Each structure stands twice: as structure tokens, then as C-alpha cells.
Length: 112
Image (tube, rainbow, N blue to C red):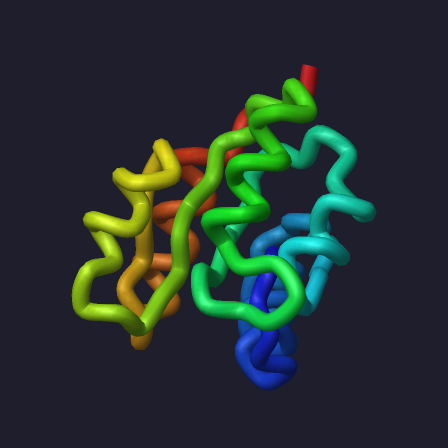
């Protein structure tokens, strides 16, 4: 999960951990690229310092990684931004816990 808001990272991490998911968090796209290891899913904020969601997605895909990306943003144009980076889905903030869990379950790749 990539988000520059520590409170969002904490809440989403707790929710997903309670659902049995391992969460690796990063506070910007640069940190996320350093931590990316072929995760089952990337939950990506778009507006962040250092390296934003657009830059992250471009570099992530250029590195050959194909993990699904779900954009999480409070912007009105969440769907457009998701389409711009070729994301697999999006969650418009604020979102319901059930929507988060459903998106993760729908888009996460299953371990082999």
C-alpha cells in the first residue's frame, strides 16, 4: 500500500491484516518502488510527495512488474486517474471498509 497519510496507512493495514492479508506500506512512490517485490496487489494513492502515483505506475510497469494496481484517491476524477495509469480498479476516498475488502479480494493475485 502506498499512501503519504500515516493514519490511512494504519487503518487500512489493520483492516487488511484482520482479513488475513500481509501489508507492506510505503509513504511515497519512490519508497514503494524500493519495497516492491511482485506483490499480489498495489493500493496506490495518486497525490504524494517525492514520487506520485503516475510516476510510480510508470516505473513499476517499466520494471516488468505486473501486479494489479488499485488507485485510492479523494479526487473527484478517481476513475479517470485510474484509467490514465492503466490501473485495474479504483476506490474513491472516503470508501467503506466492505468496498476496500471487496476490491482487494477481486484484484489480488493468488499465490502459486
